[in-house]
Amino acid sequence: MTKLDDIEPMADYWQTRFRTDLVWVAEKQEQILGFCVRKEDNIGALYVAGPARNCGVGKRLLDLAKENRDWITVWAFELNTQARKFYRREGLVEISRETEHFDDGVSLVDVEHRWTRLAKKSPDTF
Image (cartoon, rainbow, N blue to C red):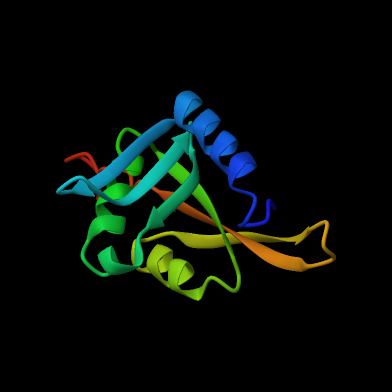
């Protein structure tokens, strides 16, 4: 992972993602509240600014990412308990775990979550 003080590589990364992936941005009065990045069936990022949390912004962004999808996957670090609680509340379930090893010697457990659209029952189904 790029260090947070290395702004240029991080800006380059996000500029590339914003050009190549599907992106939704939530804003109010020209202030960005959050964004969601989806490529195919995978959410690469869902971020909501601190002051905008618990106001429905994340749910709306996630709902947009679910549209026209039978399933989506999103990863969140095990230590990111707020995000994981949010994903569980929104119907995503844990399906796997991997340990990420970073250049600075830190290892973090990354948890894969999946949401699957419920199949609609036909009138003939019991």
